[in-house]
Image (tube, rainbow, N blue to C red; front, top):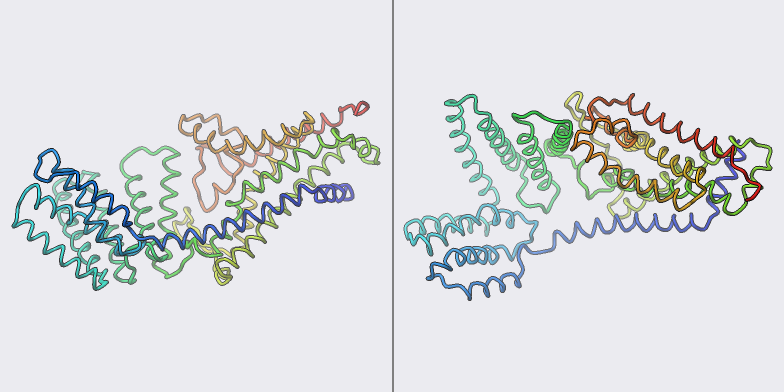
Length: 483
């Protein structure tokens, strides 16, 4: 058997197509890392607004008359946009100034234009200009903490008002949700001040603050006061997981979730390149038997002193070994190329995950984590490869054996989502909701209720056995006299 497997592997890797596939994989990995790095650098180079946009707004204003009732609202809106663009054009779109101008100063600009052109309220206009000038001084002095403290004052006022309303109506869940959201905002602002993390998105800590606020905010809004479906629970758990991972980085001064590191890209390698692994497995498995019949070499194969079952199984094992070699090659290339692009230093970091069973953060060695993920994804590779192998054996049609499994894999997520949306519980007996065991990691919620690790492994094993038995029976009965 070992000799058969060795010969099959030699046959597989001596094909010119495997060299082409290897080159394509190398190009994809280089392209992914380089483009990812370039996109991150480019995002830090563009100004918030361009001169061409300002000229466009000027043209719009020239066609509007602030003294005409039909034009006044449009005029104020366009002038506010122009004032905002002029103020922000000297700042990069990822800078803290651009964020503050867009979120804090923008309403003041609109307020001033309303008072000047619509309400014609000079007293209110003067008060707004005073606030505006104060903000401009803070901008000029690069005092982002001024805006943080102003935001904190506003949040504290809103919290006091909400607490008063809740005291009067203690059963109002909407008010309690609003209070939780405000408390989250207060935590985020205090975090900025305590950790000296400015606004904007020009560094990881700023991005982490934004993402923590977004995911925890989504979690608060999504998990309150309603009956939750399995899809809802899965989505909410995703928010909770992301929020806690970013929170861990913020409170421990780490950068485990920083996507611009070699460590992050490496730990996500299997998920990033899973489609490539699947395609290699399908291509190799899909031509394994059909090619022997189409070329007539099956006769030379069967004259050897081995049973047809052994020959068939050796070919399938060779497919799985090819899958292992492909995965190892991809990981090695990502390790090297990612290190060159981002620097090798972050490989010393562990992988951080959120454990739902204990509601706590756990750390793993990066190689142990990759091994765990690979084992969880292994049923996908085995089953998709076995399907291609079975189709190749049953129909002796390589294009069919390659195309159908790839289409099935590409459509599997859509099928699962449709089944969840329409509550087709019977779909859980299909292989696609069960072949990714990573859904169970760290106390995760499976996509369908009523399934478990044991259930999924059993379903996958049943499908595997069916395909293997069908392949063996077909191969043993196949007539080769006319080949």
